[in-house]
Amino acid sequence: MVITAFKNGTEFYDASATPYWFKTGPTWDNVRYLFHNTPYTTWLGNTAIIGLAVVGITLVLAVPAGYALARLSGRIGQSLGIGIFLTYLVPPTLLFLPLYWVINTLHQQDKLLALILVYPSFTVPFSTWLLMGFFKTIPQELEDAARIDGASRLKTLVRVVFPISIPGILTVVIFSFSLVLNEFVYAFTFISSTDHRTLSTGVYTDLIRGDLPEWGAIMVASLIPTIPLALLYNAFLNRFIAGFTGGAFR
Image 1 (cartoon, helix red, strand yellow):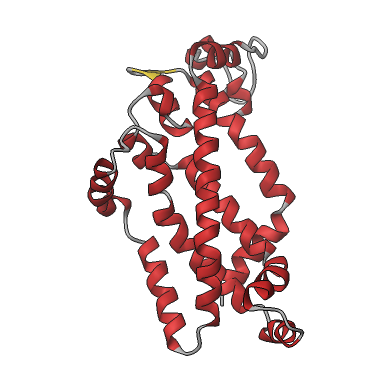
Image 2: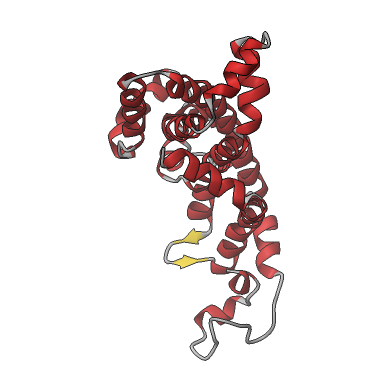
């Protein structure tokens, strides 16, 4: 991806050029084309706005739901947890018509709010199931000790449970934002104007003209959001793995 992003456009159709290195040297033409000839910064801003909003909604709904399900005794909590996770497995194509009806009824077609309302429908179920498993790994004795010291349920959740649950919460943040960054079907369906598009749909609609994709610009457009996400994964790799394993196998 990095090599292709800085290749000269003629090299893509040159049979004698190697795909793994430059033939005529690197060039910044693809970067200039992307920022000067397309509304790439607008797509980037739209994706960031939607991503932050979806992450916030997901945390507000999934954290208390996961904690409540983790502390429910007996089969009730387990059954509800499995039921919530099964909703995540529902194919997006089955939800397309009812979600379209909701968005159309609310008059949010071709607005960023449409995606902000739709995306939590599949980030919240998975995040709730993941956090439920993670909260189950936290000893109940820690909460009991805090309650004996006079802490309320809410204070115990904020002061005791949340700090221990950072790996699980961080996993939810990365998962939700990655999903927003890569989701295409709903973004392509509910957003039609260029100024409201996200990265995934903007690259597809504006950088592929007929049968001639702008390969260099596409690689640059894909590389820019990939770098910070890769750095984030690498910086918090151990906590990310702990969040997934702690939530998935309990």
